[in-house]
Length: 374
Ligand SMILES: [Fe+2]
Image (cartoon, rainbow, N blue to C red; front, side, top):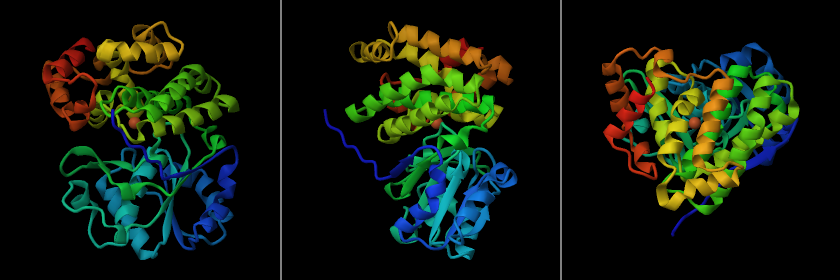
């Protein structure tokens, strides 16, 4: 066995940690930055409070970002960074502001648009990068500690990942109190994204021991605390534990990446508008059963470490957790009507991420899965 592990992001975890942002900015010697956040965080005053607390270190704010950010969002963000001669950026939010800001920071000091880099035409140049500090407001994506940005190019109708070692944030602030206002439906979806990161990195062909240990820890936390955080939004302990699960699952998939459920989530989101985590969860129990016997029952041992009888028992628990939180269970529910649509879903799911699954997934495997979900 051969593996590498790297985690260059400084992590600051705890309630009210966001109040330490000015000191954290100063510790890096940064002076002039731009805040990147969602429209909601700008509207509800959270962004303004942070800017005020930063006392002049933040000189502008960019908040025109749609869920599942587009390359156009990134180009607009880059424009603001360049106009303000930003030395750094603070990304405040869930995955969308984070991914948008990460890509924008990677090319901020250059002159080109993101599309050239997104398609792999131009490599990220260290002379064009500005550093990013990530402040997480949801417990889910793990984007605050990965070098991955998922972007949608509307002109090409493609949603794909962009990543580079130069795209890691320099610091991640995880303040569970910031997640108290996340609505139940979003808590459910983002929490299931955490579970997908933990499980898929475990059954990725790139799995390795450090990340596997993180997968076990994060999975246990999700099964213990996600439903509590969903049904009791003010339960700070549940919020803390889900924030912990999110960051630990972020470490879990930071090196091995994800696999089948994330590959299939992209068309489910793009074509049918299913939120990212809910879209990943739609196929997660199926893939758990599909992968159960691989590599001498490795997943059964994992499931037992997480308190289940075996992998099938864990798959049943995923199904029941999704049901309890009102997540989509069938393709009909999300608007898939014909077998032709299933064909399209299958075609669009056939991305390189599928090749990371511990059992190679063929076109027919994926199509049969979708047919079973009608
Ligand atoms: Fe994800």
